[in-house]
Image (cartoon, rainbow, N blue to C red; front, side, top):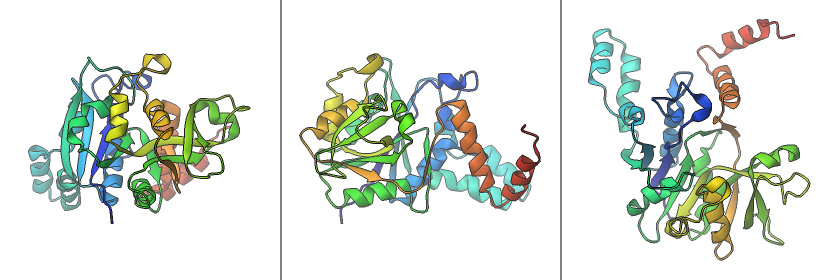
Length: 291
């Protein structure tokens, strides 16, 4: 059975909606309770069979590299204080995967397609890989990446795009899937932020993809789209015109943490699920006078 071993995670944005908190750290390092967002992504990828995790960052932000490295002083302190459970957790982090870090330089255009140009030399011709936006979380019984891989294994030449239905009045916030005539899974186009009255469906793509070198080649042409940015959506739309591109309708709950309100919503829901304090937190929320 065909396998995918590499995942590229982007953590190269500026996180301007979280300033000043993101002045010296990427937004992907913001915590969901006691674990940074990006660690949830790495764990999802590893649980799906990924062994090599390529993280694209930008200059001046070392927090991601430091987090997935060993920390001698913290480990010594935990060992001295006999905090065995925490020590095991900290020591496990660098062992999650084979980590590769790349920097997105200023000569590349801004946009969610640019990190793929940074990592292009690490992808072989004919090789498929997972691409993950660093601020999208998915809570599911089966890891979201594993669900995409299951779809891809039916045709390893295909590009796979994760999607979920959204309310019709919210389609103007997302890239919306347009299916080929007579198909319920093959993509003809992805329409960026359409008018709800004209949207081709209510299926919104989100930050999980299985791509290949041909998609990177399209991005390398640096055809800028909306806002003068290099958009992955544009490259996938062009790819879909000539080659098989399919939807993986992911089961689970998708959280976008790219702005403070949605980040806080994700924080609350993850906290309510915690076995150690979720029940107590729920009681606290119920005690608030929200009128």
